[in-house]
Length: 321
Image (cartoon, rainbow, N blue to C red):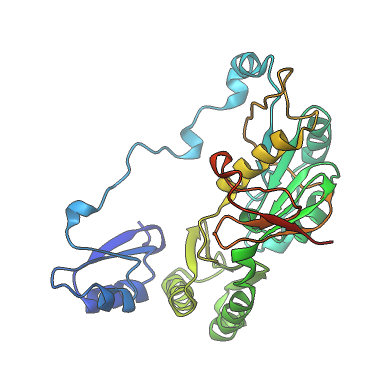
């Protein structure tokens, strides 16, 4: 198992620092002497006092081993019958192939036509870690929801734009981290630093295997320096604002907004939206930003919106054009 796909437990500052420099995806510091801050300073992602505090999730399956929905088409149709589906689709690895250079990723044949047809039947949302403008340009379909930067930057079918305020505050920090990584890694390493508005991605698909740990370690250093969240993926490590928000919470927010907006699409006859998830694309609405002291706040309209239905009146969005 490659270090960048592995977690490691280290019981002292030297072990933590070595694990971090070796490019492990997750470093658990085991603090048996009462000095957790020292282990965190050396690069631990989390510190525990006892290994019994570590829970390992089991039972997950590779996507390739999961059932194909097309093989159960009749069952899916039965589930959707009498309901209004809400389809959300990811771009990279779903509607486009994973490629070493993200700038070369394009929609697979037939995807654009299928999305256009689907958007005539139900609400569609396109989710991506790419910038909002980038994903809109690549898909080019009006009348759908677009969620860029892992949902930190949204656009509704009517053109209204929603941005997460807490994440927006980290934009200058992201720029600084991107500049440092570009200078540190340099063009000769094979790493590609992609700076989006709300994130910094370091693609290492073209990096020599023995140099991958150095790339991962460089990203971790910027994560610790700026207090950013670090996420690993297939051939990529990414820095994001340290905010509890991701594609899943963004999807739930869009679903709830579709329901609350009272749009005909996304509601069944009783006026209650039942959703099925397949990320879709953004549509046009006036620009908005989230404005609130809590991490889930959004600005866009004077209406109160939040990431979760039960908190629907917690965060106040504000509009901007």
